[in-house]
Image (cartoon, rainbow over all chains, first blue to last red; front, side, top):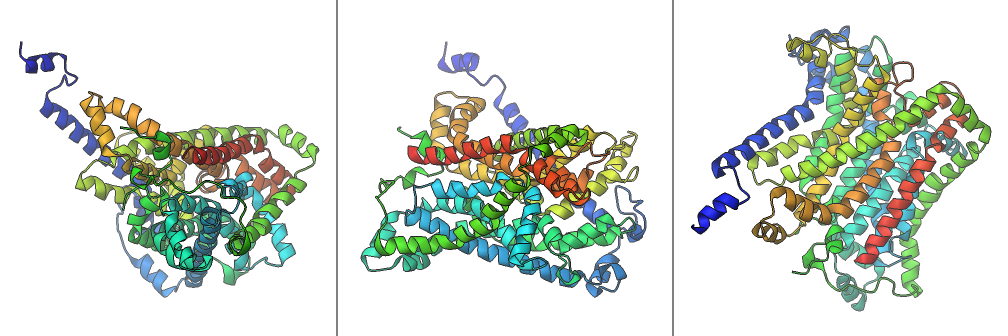
Length: 297
Length: 305
């Protein structure tokens, strides 16, 4: 009895190689199709409603848009309709809050992770796990005392209060991610620079920040997405019209029974574009940054 | 081949296993301490002013035991508490397990799978409010919603999706999984990439089937990352009001509320902020153990390195 026939008889592979290959590739394709449908159905629905010309007063749409039109986007661009007059200032407000949250989260998070991880302030993880105590009360509940505290600080109806809240909630995770990633940077580099007479600030600026770039990009994108996802803190803390953000405007459409659904979805699509653009621009950093240098190089 | 699984599991690639400095070099002194304090001050200030103070305020607001008697007497609260456990338990576990499995699919070296990953990440980057509103209109507009129309195309009669609390909550859970699964998939993908391929080759030479390779190589090496991610996801899920607020809206008649949205309704719609805060604090017996588990996990895995 030859070796190959033994292998054929007792080997693990009981199905022929080609069939095996076909099953795997076929299964992959099937799974891929499922993932595509799963990921895109709600996105497709947004376009379906946005492109429906009759979306203004009813939503008798079908699986395909019957008379698709881009009118709604041109109206948005000109902001010529009663319902959408203030939409561009709202975009400005969202952008302002999003950028501030991103910059502050990256700055405060990187400073804190440098102090904890490189300057070894406190036992290694004590401080960064204490930061997670921030999540001890669900954020939608914490808004109630938060609103009162903002009254005490005199920050009510001020975008700064929203920025403060979002930075508070984004930073603990940011510190964790940065601290994990910082483990990839040999501390000998710091020591060498210190021996050459660099101060801690110089090490932070010239060694830590440049080498942490992928993690900083990941954390910044995370913070931007966080600010873009938030609605509650904006809704509760801002009430004058000039502070309205896009998330708040969308919610107002949602509350209004006669709302023009097509405008709502068109605004939703435009609102989704900036984080998508930034995310995909920085995508190659995301996996490596978020999993602390899981990808080599 | 000597591989310390703990080192891998905490995501330090093998190539970077330099001996490192002692964990604790003794107290900081002189200018280093000054710099360290200066660097931590911004975060400490944010933490105290915008986290600690409001949390303390919440504990004070919800300190009256009578509030909890009032909550337990309210059937809406009891239902919301059950829903919260179902929401967190189901949404988090399903998305973590699927993310772990799908991250394996996305490591396959095919160009179309790389392209598919780009599409798959879309829900994560889509802002929550528009995404959940889209789910809402897909489901709620009986009988013309996209889902009902799709069912009709297959000859199935339209369904009032939000007629039952469980059905409505089910859709909230689906949407939560849809939104957050890509984040954890990316994280596990990064974790899988850090596993040296020779481990799989060695296992394959020893005759391990793909399932065995997954069970005896991938799972042990990703276990720590998986547990930490699950704990973080669960902690976040307790505060995730988005799906319930925008998709089911708690319908029908508060049957699909979770604690984080019901507390908000208590505070705003019923003008009883203290009761709302008490509803939020009532999840502490579940949330605090998760937080402690996370903190311990972060500290002990570090000690193993």
